[in-house]
Length: 212
Ligand code: PRP
Image (cartoon, rainbow, N blue to C red; front, side, top):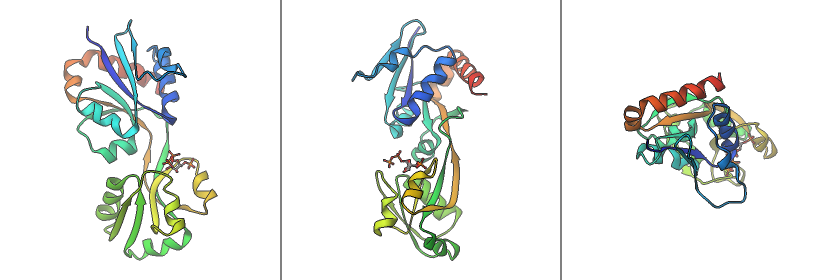
C-alpha cells in the first residue's frame, strides 16, 4: 500500500487540525515534536505521511498531487484558485474576510468612489471590488501587518482577515463590510480522489464525525 500524503498549514491552524486528526483515529503524535527542523513525518501503521507547509503553498502541493489531501483556510483556497476538490469544512479557524478601515472611509464605499485597497489577498479583493461591488479600486499587495496601510496613508481601506477584531481595535480601525466567512477546509487532489477513493473517503468520514 502506498503512503497517503497530507499537507497541513503551519501556524495558528496546526494544533487544532492535529487535534481533529487525533480524534478521528489518525495518530499524529510524531508531528508534535517541538524542537525539530524535520519537515515530514510518517505514520507507519496507517501508511500516512504528513508535512507542514506555509498556508498559500498547501493548495499548490495538492493540485500537483505531491500531497493527496490538505487542510487549508478557505481564504487561501479562494485566493489561490487551484484545481482541487474541496470536500469538508472542519469548522475550525473560523473568521471573516472583511473590508476594514477608518470610519472616514465609509464615504468612499457608500459613493462607490475610486478606492485604494491594501491586502494579502489581491485575487479576493479584485473579485470583491470589480465583480461584486463594481467599484474602481487600486489593489496593493502586501505581505503582512496589513492594518498599517490605512494608518500611514498607503491605502484607504484593507481587505483582510478579522478573527477577534483586536488588531483592528488597537489600531483605531473597524470592519466596514464583510466579504465572506472563513474556516479550515479539507481539499483533495482530483486524481487521488479517483485512485485512492476508498482510503480518502474513509478518512473524510472519520473527520466529518469528529467535526459534527
Ligand atoms: C491576521 C490578520 C489580522 C489579524 C486578525 O494576521 O491579517 O492582522 O490576524 O486577528 P484578530 O482579529 O484576532 O486581531 P496574522 O497574525 O496572521 O499575521 P500578519 O499580520 O502577518 O498577516
